[in-house]
Length: 214
Ligand code: DX5
Ligand code: ZN
Image: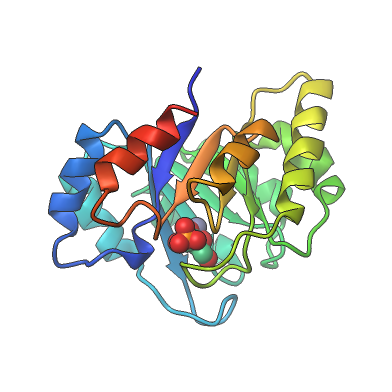
């Protein structure tokens, strides 16, 4: 099974996004990663439900929505209606177990995300409620940052625990993924690669194909 690719549109030009999405579909992307930021949980503001709704109407790629918002349970129904994979942060102040279950009940795949400051052991007991775990390899908030190698140990620890518990959980990595860091992440157990600034370039198609070959 080849690794799955989930391009992040955060650094895209939104006026030409429709064309880019068609190119990403043609290149064989598996998901589209959508970063929702509220200016409180992270020091940046991006977009919300209306933009995701337009993308969903335009695209056949499953949408992988990464909520970087405080108390995500407040908005979970609205986002579930426009998501395929729906993830929120362990650190964001909701009841994590209840929210993971609610996401599944609403018909989406559940994803729990951890910031660089959170140890993987803190979420081991929640793994049976997760369809995917997202390990941040930068501080969430901005595209184009440098990959933090400490994320690699976290991937290995989570991969080991997922196997120990006999679960099927995708392991996603997000932040600073490029031609050098992607192979390291895959070797450490990542099954889904998010990449923003690396993919949204003149070499979009070649770069997606390269990542998919890992
Ligand atoms: C950062 C976002 C990322 C970001 C990745 O908070 O979660 O998805 O867009 O961008 P790159 O790949 O440029 O680090
Ligand atoms: Zn993200």
